[in-house]
Image (cartoon, rainbow, N blue to C red; front, side):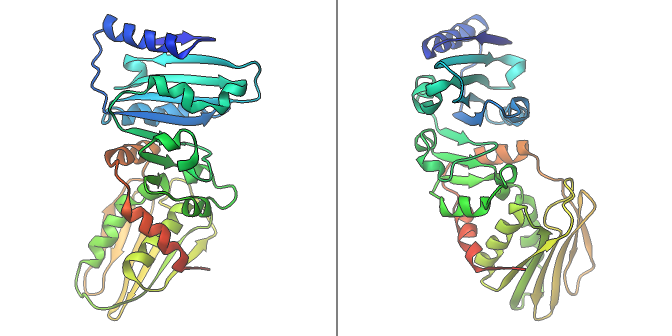
Amino acid sequence: MIITLPDTSTHEITKNLLKTQEDYSMATGRVLTLIVVADADDDIEAILAPVREASREHPSRVLVVLGAPESEPARLDAKMLFLGDSGSSETVIMTLHGPMANHPAEIVTPLMLPDTPIVAWWPTTAPANPSEHPIGAMAQRRITNARHNVSGNALLRVSSGYTPGDSDMMWSRITSWRGIVASALDRPPHDEILRAQLIGPADNPSVDIAAGWLADRLGVPVERAATNDDIEDHFPIRKLTITRASGEVTIETRGTRTIKVGVPGHPEALVAMDPRSDTDCLAEELRYLDADQAYACALTGLGRVVVR
C-alpha cells in the first residue's frame, strides 16, 4: 500500500501512520528506527530493495531522507509504504526541497519511534565524519558504503573520521571470508607466521580493510597488491598468501562462488562462498548496535599495510 502526500508536514505524516496502523491492524513491534540519507537524484528503488529485504529480520520504521537543496521554495513531499510495498517495515520517503534540505534532523525527529535504537545509513555518498552529521549525531550506529563512493580516498575518509558506532559495508562484505581465513589458520601446523600478501582490485576498499585486519591481528608485515582486473561478480580478494615457517597458507578465489584453501600438510579444499549483497551486509550491520571494536582495530591496522 502506498500513500502519497505532496507538500505536506510531519504532523500529517504522523496522522497517516497512526490511521494506517488502526485501519489495517498493523503490528507495531518495530525494533529500531532506520534513517536512510540519500540524494533525490539517487536510484531510490535500488536503495529500498535491501532495506525491504533486511526488514524481514529487523522490522523497523524506515525514514528515507532525500535532499533536493537546489529546489525552491522550501517544501516537504512524502510517500508512505506499508504492507507488501515495505517488507516487514513501514517506510516514509521524504524529499526535502530548498532550505529544508539543510535541516534533516528537525524533520525526522517527530517521526522516530520512542525508546528504540536509531541507525543511520548512507547507501551512496557519505559525509566525511558521519558522527558530526545532523542525522549521525542522533544515531547509535552509522553505516556507510565506501564501495559506492570510491571517488577520492574513501578509505582515508572512513578511517580519519572514525567515531565509535561507525561501520562500513566494505567490512561486512568480507565476514564470510574472514571466517575461512581464521579456520585455515586454526589448522596445524601452528608455527610462526612471518608475513602476508593480499591481491585484489586497486579501487576496492574491502581488500584494503582486509589487509588492515590481518596487520592488526597477526602483527606481521602485510602487503596489499593490485590486480589488473575488476570482475564485479568475483569476490574482491583474489588471493591471500600467509607465509609460515612450514610453508604458505593460500586462500584463492576460483570462479564466482568458490574459494580454494591450501594449508601445508593438508589436501587442498574448496569452500562455497556467495558474494555478499547490500541486503546481506545491511542485515548483518543491524544485528549489532554496539560499537564494532574489530572494525576499529582493522582501521588502525591500515597504517601498517604496505601497498604495491
